[in-house]
Amino acid sequence: MLKINSNYSKIKPTYLFAEIAHRVAQHKEKNPEAQIIRLGIGDVTEPLCPAVVEAMHRAVEDEAHRESFHGYGPEQGYQFLRDKIAAVDFAENNIQISADEIFVSDGAKCDCGNIQELFSADTRIAVSDPVYPVYVDTNIMAGRDNIVYMLCTKENGFVPTPDDIANEKPDVVYLCYPNNPTGAVATKQQLKAWVDWANENSSLILFDAAYEAFIRTPEIPHSIYEIEGARKCAIEFRSFSKTAGFTGVRCGYTVVQTEVEALDANGVKTQLKPMWTRRQTTKFNGASYLTQRGAEAIYSPEGRAQIRSTIDFYLENARLIRQAMTSLGYTCVGGVDSPYVWVDVKCSSWEFFDKILKSANVVTTPGAGFGAAGEGFIRISAFNSRENVLESIERFKKAL
Ligand code: MLT
Image 1 (cartoon, protein in one colour):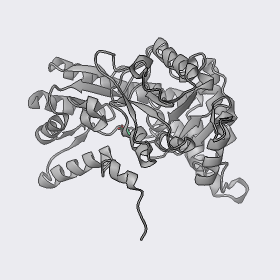
Image 2 (cartoon, helix red, strand yellow):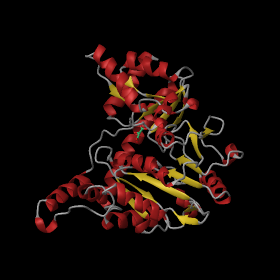
Image 3 (cartoon, protein in one colour):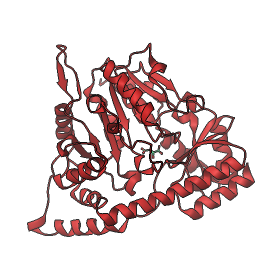
């Protein structure tokens, strides 16, 4: 009889946010009247901005006529979108990325999960603890369970250093800044230490920049490519989910530059870019034309102003949440340059999660769900309406 991939038995049976959804559904079943406010999963609540909506309407119209109809698109993404990404996200910031090093996809989660297919089964990976579970689970699914965990604590400002793994020699390090879940940001010096380490050790950095649009502090880097030497040793993931409210629309992109190399079975250096092209052209048919026209509109002057104002709105939510939790006596990280507030609750994080779910009808994310070092913390997401954020704060004041 068919045998399963037994690596699946090494991961938790449910994905973190599925487990939370399950607990919330149980609570709702017992308390049908409860007005639940969701500050758990980082899912956006504000509608798509007008520039995106108009562009998508026009794209629907294109698809309605034979002359402007599009069938399968280029797997790597339409040129019109890749050119805008290269010009606005990178060239404007003095980073030279060519459009053919950009791979448009249906979101950063898929790319972060799929990229490990390019590496050998015995590749040693390192991740932060706490960590976005996708990096860990996808590697375990592929049989790599020898994972190095880099502790992120108050002491290191939730940013690990290469010294933390001096004896481990991982081949690949996942870094995510602004960080999910802690909301911490990394400085140029901290990222420079990682880039130097990766180049010295012929290792690869997988840099998840899904939350870069929330950075408002001028000196905090938005991209790993702001760091000299990163072209050779880093792949970067970007997402339109939080940047432009595309969690439901689905679109993101990955940058794989020509210089990024690894060894083949004969010990010969080979580029990862053609491999990623091969992977995407085989397993993916591209994000839809409508989606990519919508994404393109984010880069118009109106689109840029509109998405910035929505992000400012969420950042104000984050500031209010952080201020409220601090005034209730909790120590917080994040919530500045990030939509997530990481709260030290000084008790079991699942217990705290249950307590505020039951007593305040507010959903958060227990830190332990992101790894052992997340125990004792909860993550509160700023993605909600102002009304719901203010209401949650009132409920916290009564419940805590
Ligand atoms: C989160 O809440 O951590 C994110 O929404 C998950 C994701 O982006 O996949």
